[in-house]
Amino acid sequence: MSDRQSAWCLLTEFTQSENLRKHALAVEACMRAYARKFGEDEEKWGVVGLIHDFDYDRWPSPEDHPYRGNEILIERGWPEEITKAVMSHADYTGVARETRMEKALFACDELAGFITAAALVRPDKSIHSLEAKSVKKRMKDKAFARSVSRDDIVNGSAALGVDLDEHIAFCIEAMKKVAPELGLEGNSGAPQPAQ
Image 1: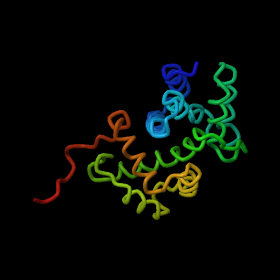
Image 2 (image 1 turned 45 degrees about the vertical axis):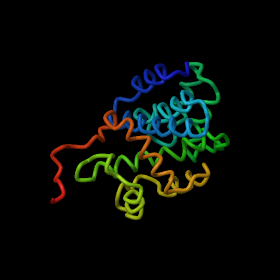
Image 3 (image 1 turned 90 degrees about the vertical axis):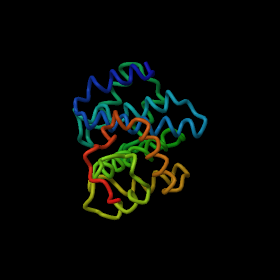
């Protein structure tokens, strides 16, 4: 039950929002990259990234998410290691992040959303031209992507034991590999710099 195909089926069963599906793919890409970096199980880490918000489209309130999703995962026989990671990504559940996989999920979740927002406001709408320093600059603008918790990004990076600048650059690189699926390839009609 914990392979990528099962995870994708679960995500698409419960998540109709194209943006939420793209967010899941972005977090999956970051998680897979960190699994490779740390010598961990890439498939498992990717699956956790892919399904962490699968219930959010139907049940977005803190009273329901990720609790409803966790109930569904348990009913369907998903491993406890995965269900606990999903529960731990929301601070308000009280489920402690103990494993490196749980810490990575928390560190990548909000950042992946923020990187997407930062890429989409670029003139070329491309992640390929996005740099970590631009993301850091945007983080200081409280009006930009205001629903994204800057504290979660900073604290997640620290808990994972990764420098914030390196974490941002690492996640940008991971997301570049799936840019077409994320809608972040950019457009060719963007203004070109003067020669």
